[in-house]
Image (cartoon, rainbow, N blue to C red; front, side, top):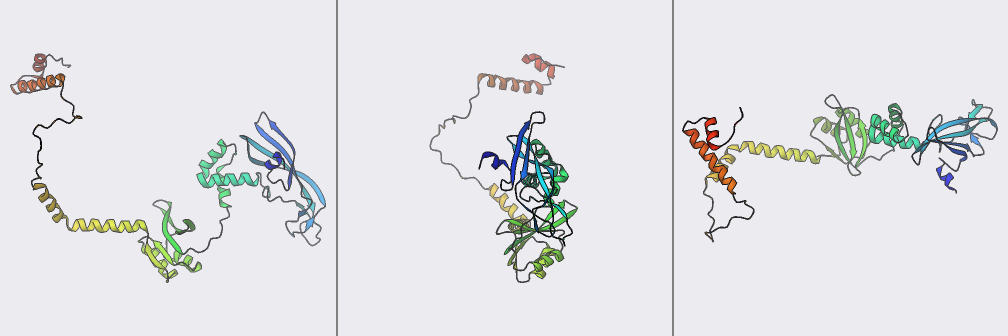
Length: 323
């Protein structure tokens, strides 16, 4: 397989006809054709080889060496040979290249979908523009909505907590598989009825870790009566903090008295082994300038105590003052 075949969206069913670079738009423009000999009717699934006509689909593709790519894919319309089928003419599908009526290849849509999931609509749109894979906010949100979420087995250890759709206004409930560290489901509210309904339709939960909310405790009790309810790690620490704080408040007087009594005790004497202690090397000795500055300060305080004005003291000590 040559290099160009690796650049095709699916070399098994497509083939390049022509490739050139538009120096004005800085874009790689390719033309390709579908090579599969027959097509299945999308309605009755009967194969057909009778070609009715041809047309060209324009698809955006992933970058090539920093250049945006446009593929002109030549596809065929076939006649359905099933006389009982309502579809007489149909266009061949290339599901490994692009979705029906899509204007981008499947791999470009997957890349934009990943960007939207990571950065959101507005941020993803700006990042796509910087990567020459232009996509609007609405397109990215549509790609996120069409994401197929894989089916997950009911977790053995389920974490339940609320999450803010709009902080301070609207809240839902998030369910997490604590053994796998993956989100299992999201409920639209945080009522006990919603959690109860989810647990009843997903039997098998053995341990439910939740906060101290009574609604979740009630929903877990009704939806999974055999499951063990435990507090999560954060709320265990929260409970411990509250208990310690309450104990300190109750014994505040005793604690304060013990601290005062300890501060009044005479500190232990340190036995001196040498009466001529040397000055630590990191303590800087005063210089002549420091001593002179100290003498001037003492003289200024003495004159001020005698009733001298600030101007007279400054003149006497040889300092200028600015008015």
